[in-house]
Length: 249
Image 1 (tube, one colour):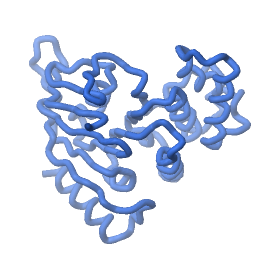
Image 2 (cartoon, helix red, strand yellow; image 1 turned 30 degrees about the vertical axis):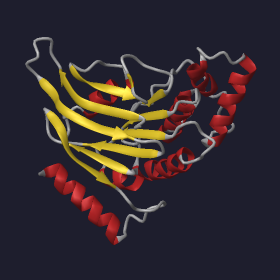
Image 3 (cartoon, helix red, strand yellow; image 1 turned 180 degrees about the horizontal axis):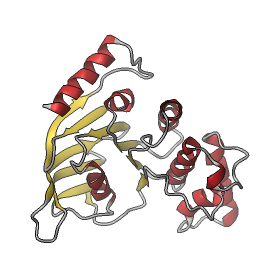
Image 4 (cartoon, one colour; image 1 turned 180 degrees about the vertical axis):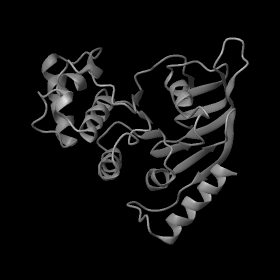
């Protein structure tokens, strides 16, 4: 059974249903699979991710987690936002602990969990600092630490590296890939929206290509390359070119 099933999703931006953004999108995400969604600007990629998360409702179609329909946010799914979405009046450790606010853990265990995650993400020494003293890459590390603090099974990421400079994004991609493939973490499935085809090939087991709006599933391509991936290899460049062609057809 797939961990996430997306079936025939359709979405309109207006009540009168005159502006269709998503026409017919279907795909699945398996356990221990990293899936990227790419498509032209304005085709509804971020909207689709929010529908998967239960933050928005589709006009038709269905999203399931382990066979159960998702109608609202559930603890098994967690979301990483493009703009970090950190609360500036909270310290970094309190931002991470925010994900544990409904947990039955006692305060000491919440503190310990957040402290350990910030350490894993290279933020030791910044636990009691505020987000305004952090670089963009460090802020996103706090955002990802918060997203996995509650031990979700599925991580949904909306263009998590797009607001970072390329050197910072490259380092963070490597860190995230290493962390998410750590068997000690609860996350076993990742779905990421990106506009960066090279990034999709570098990180993904599978890439879902959407058409221009109103979007439909145009192509689903497996990426069979071993990790870590050589971005200069012939196989990597061939897959990148093939996806770019599919994107622009």
